[in-house]
Amino acid sequence: DAKTTQPPSMDCAEGRAANLPCNHSTISGNEYVYWYRQIHSQGPQYIIHGLKNNETNEMASLIITEDRKSSTLILPHATLRDTAVYYCIVRPRWDNQGGKLIFGQGTELSVKP
Amino acid sequence: DAGVTQSPTHLIKTRGQQVTLRCSPKSGHDTVSWYQQALGQGPQFIFQYYEEEERQRGNFPDRFSGHQYPNYSSELNVNALLLGDSALYLCASTHTGTSGSRNTGELFFGEGSRLTVL
Image (tube, rainbow over all chains, first blue to last red; front, side, top):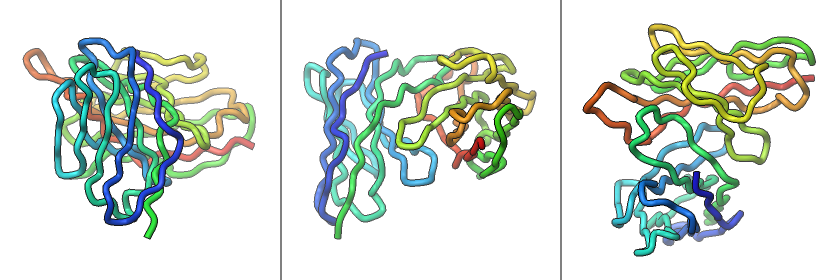
C-alpha cells in the first residue's frame, strides 16, 4: 500500500476554506485517494475519493495533481463542527473484499471562531 | 436505517482476562472489518470477515480472533489481555457483493468500544 504524508495539524478560521494537503508520491495506477475524518470520540467518517479527476460532493472537494503524487481536500466554508482529524488514504478501489484501510497519523484540523 | 452498532461502548478488564466485542453492520452490508485505535494514533487494521471467513489480517497476534455470523454480525475476541491492548476498537462495514457489483471503498464505522486493561 502506498504511503501518505500529511501535516500533523492545521488551523482554519470559521467560514473560510480549509485546504488540507496530502502527499502520496508512490501511488500506483490502480490506487484511488480516499479521505476520511474522525471527530473526537467518534468513528471515522468517509468524505470523498477520486482517481485522477477533481471530485466534489456535498461535503468537500478533492483536487488531485496531474501526476497524482499529491492531493488537496477542500472544505469550502469550514465550521466549528469540521474540527476533526482528517486522514488521507490510498488504496485500490476494485478490492473485491474491501475492508482494509491503512491509516496514517492524519491532520488535526482546528476550526476557530 | 441503523448504521454500524457496537457493544459494549466501554469496558474495563484486568490483565490476563478475555474480552468479546460485538458489531452489527449497516443494513445491506456483508463485510466487517475490525480496527484498533490507540490513544493519539490512527486506526490499525486487525482483520476482515466476509462470508463468515477471515479474508485479510493485519499485523496482530493470534490472541486476536474473530467470527462472523450468517446474519453478517461479527465478534472480536481478545485473549490473555495485556495493558497494551487498551484502545478504542472500531468495527467497519461495507458491501462486497456478488459478481458484477463493485466495492466503492467506502467503509462505515461504528462509534467503537473503548477497552481499558488494568
